[in-house]
Amino acid sequence: MKLYDAPRAANPRRVRIFLAEKDVVIDTEPVDIMSKQHLEEPFARLNPLRRLPVLVLDDGTVITESIAICRYFEEVHPDPPLFGRDPKEKALVEMWQRRVEFGLLFPSQFAFRHTHPAMRELEVPQIPEWGEANKPKIMSFLGFLDREMSADGYVVGDAFSIADITALVAIDSLKLSKIRIPEDLTRLKSWYDRVSSRPCVVL
Amino acid sequence: MKLYDAPRAANPRRVRIFLAEKDVVIDTEPVDIMSKQHLEEPFARLNPLRRLPVLVLDDGTVITESIAICRYFEEVHPDPPLFGRDPKEKALVEMWQRRVEFGLLFPSQFAFRHTHPAMRELEVPQIPEWGEANKPKIMSFLGFLDREMSADGYVVGDAFSIADITALVAIDSLKLSKIRIPEDLTRLKSWYDRVSSRPCVVL
Image (cartoon, rainbow over all chains, first blue to last red; front, side, top):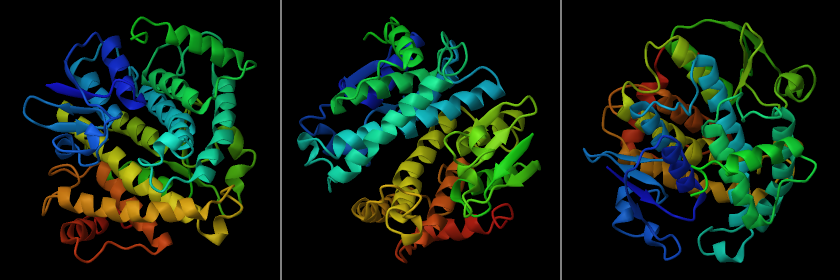
């Protein structure tokens, strides 16, 4: 089994944190995005969509998409559970994982990729107006997340989950667009400080 | 338990097909998107993100996001399994479900919402250049899906799954942008005819 990883990208970081929380160590091969190694053979043959991370199982099965890779490890290494513990919690974790992707992670990627000069060759066509349109949506979602969060819990109740991992990685990715959590969102800031200092997150 | 539904929208249709495949019948309340009922109280209190569908459990728990609602029913009504049967298949179903969302369903929604005059008030700012930029990506993904598909199977192997539901609903939603499956994508067309004539899909 081998994980193809990109050390600086947001999605592969989700998988690294997930594996660290489960104390799973696997063979990893870095792919250099900056030199466009992911756009060329042999990597492009593994994942024709040319995105990272990619997990290759011992029987040769190729699994792409961070959440699908995490789901695989949730099944084969169930403890600690990071996708919820019972039907209701599993649904709420799925709900928040997706809300955070749609409200924060994808808008953050759109904002960066469609406005930053370094992305002009990779994001074609680059549409700065679309990048900018995502920024107020991000600010609005940060406020929503703060309002929905308890004072000392996690994104879903009292258990750390994949929804926290996606939220943390998304918020860190906002630095590329110079967006920080506003000072008055005190519950979100307190959650961020707590989660980002976990041993498995400080990688 | 009650499901808030929108009869003509793509995401609620995913849940309706999923429930029909599992032979689950639940209390349903339609919400009229055209008259913007989903943007106002009392619905907006249920889901502050103002999107459909929404499932309310008997204990009052609110579950939003189509896939989270489907995940809940997969847990409480496991047969037939629609998210995969073992760790590897579960990962592959998750992978394809997401690939189809990112490559087809979301681009289809962007293409429609950012170019159609009827969406000008709902999608603010409407950016036609972004809508148009999604169309070649959709065509490219349809070709990818055709190449990856077997002659007589489903999106993942030999079992119908949530990945087929998302792909079917996404392809039907392309009609809004006047995009059809190209004639030369014969495996995809054959899959589409087979899947769209299932009794649970013809709703």
